[in-house]
Image 1: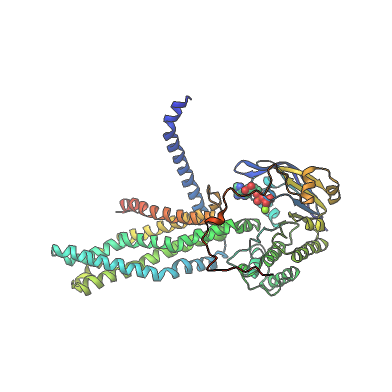
Image 2: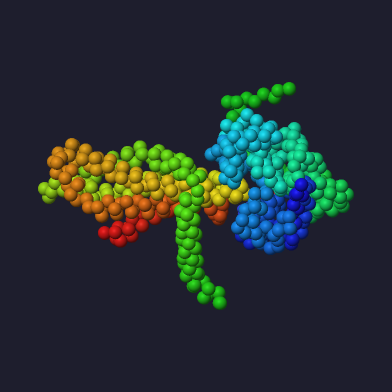
Length: 278
Length: 268
Ligand SMILES: Nc1ncnc2c1ncn2[C@@H]1O[C@H](COP(=O)(O)OP(=O)(O)O)[C@@H](O)[C@H]1O
Ligand SMILES: [Mg+2]
């Protein structure tokens, strides 16, 4: 079996309109393994993924997938590269005008010559994989957040990609659902030979699935290595991140406000008497 | 450059950058239009999407076009009758209503009405898809979003606008007959024969060309605004989409009237 390709970033700067969000990234995401990218909100995790996926041009540096510079590919080779990649976007990004079935069928209908009944078989299988059998005819807005994510995952898997990107697969899910999703991702790693890049700021989920961890922050990469190496790290920011400590501030967080609003509100005590229940 | 001099040149600098910005956008719009037009013919898979869009842009607009056309014709019949009756020329009512509708009002009013009904929906739909990463998702799946989203709308607009314009003409000329002939008492036979005599093939053709041009302009502007809603400065997310929709409608209406002037002076 072909080994799943790895991803290598060389002195990469990513950002929008020439203004970098993160720069100087020299990272590897090993093939056939799960790399978890962690970092605070807004530190550029999604931005990095979108650059790897060629949705934006990097400001500087290069991205290699399986040894090929993705931004220098063109024509047929670029399309082949795209077809090897699956993405679960942060909110699923399912097409709102199509049912779940049609959403999953779309790439198959566009890129393969499969017959309708084969398409149905494949989709049944993928939906069973993510535990969404029976929701084929629903529209994305009729699903809960967790179901939308799982449907997005099924769509990402429908073309049997070799590289799977998941942008915050567990955010907005309750602990049980996120644990289930972690198991699902691990199951998939066990069954298919693929490289997985998971963006997360869920530390529990990181510990559950990561082979390799990348920490972004402060506009650069702060760490890469295994979970054990991360735990052993002495870096101050990493420790704060891992121990979930807030940033230290000079001013105390809670002081009395300069003006109490209560005095200026309508007096409702006669209309609505709120009881103090014990 | 000294400070004072730079200050005095500031208005020109602003004018210059506005002008280059305008030229840049014109270029981007042209490329966007040509791209979507080319992609209309990207395989048979486009056909059902075009049909669906014709249903949305064309079929579902029939009632509102009938309403607008009816009232426009009725007002025109009434006003022209009063004006012409002063000179005892009410026999020319049919010519007046027919010519003004076919040459000007039908293409323009239809296009403006469709901008409000279908164009704004195009911007909002594509804009929402942009901000919810659906367009990114299409890109990743190697499905050209312009082919998938814009090209069917372009084809459907090019088909629907002229047909609805013709329908508008029909209703409006009948509306003129209703007020001019039935209500105010102009001669019925004279009305219809004047409609027939005064309209040349070149008038019909001109109205047809206008509606085709308006279709391309409206669809291009509305889809473009939605497609690039994320590049708006200052407004992002849902607010950006609503701003884009407003911009698209205003731009479309202005462009319809401006290009109508240009077309009228070129065609006749
Ligand atoms: N399309 C865009 N244009 C300009 N700036 C953006 C865009 N998308 C995100 N950003 C900015 O880039 C930074 C990183 O965003 P993002 O990658 O989404 O963060 P996260 O790590 O939470 O996924 C943020 O400051 C955000 O405001
Ligand atoms: Mg993100």
